[in-house]
Image (cartoon, rainbow, N blue to C red):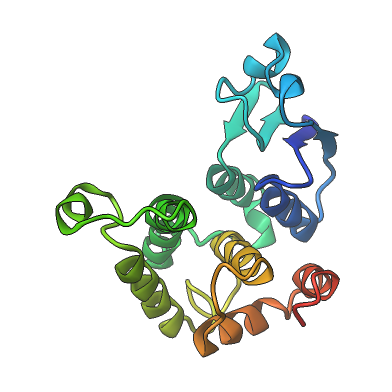
Length: 203
C-alpha cells in the first residue's frame, strides 16, 4: 500500500482531514506548508494548481478539497465503517451533507464574514440564496440526526460537518444553538473529537 502524504497548514481546513486520518488510525506523512511561496513552488503546484491546502497524495493519486479527501479516505478504508455501503439509502444523506457543507454553507459563511449583504435579486442567482436560509437548512438536518447525519453511526461526513461547526463555535462566528450543541456532544463520543474539543476549551 502506498504511503499517504497530507500537505497541510496548522491554520487551515487541512485540520479536518488530519483529524479524520487520526480517527481512521492509519499511517500518514504530514507535510506542513507555510502560506505564500511554499504553496506556489512548481512541485506543489503540480499537486494542487490552486496553491492551497490540504492536498492528499496516495501514490499516483492526488485528492484536493477537504470534503473530497474525507470521502476518498472513507471509501479507501471502507472496512473502518465511516462510509455507508454503496447500495445503502444512507448514501443519499451522506452525499447531500458533504456537498451542502462544501458548497452553500461554505459560501454563505464566507459572504457573511466579508459583510456582504445580498439583495433579493442576487440571492436568486447565488447557490446558497441567503445566510439565514442556509443556516435554517443546516439546523433542519441536525434536527433529523439520529444522532448522526446518516443515522446511528458516525460517518466521515459527520467529521467534516462537525469540524466546520466546531471551528465556527470556537471563533464565535455563530452562537451555538441547542441543536448544534447536541450534535457536537454526539461527536464527542469519539475520543479524537473529545480531545479536540477539550484542547479548544469547548467542552
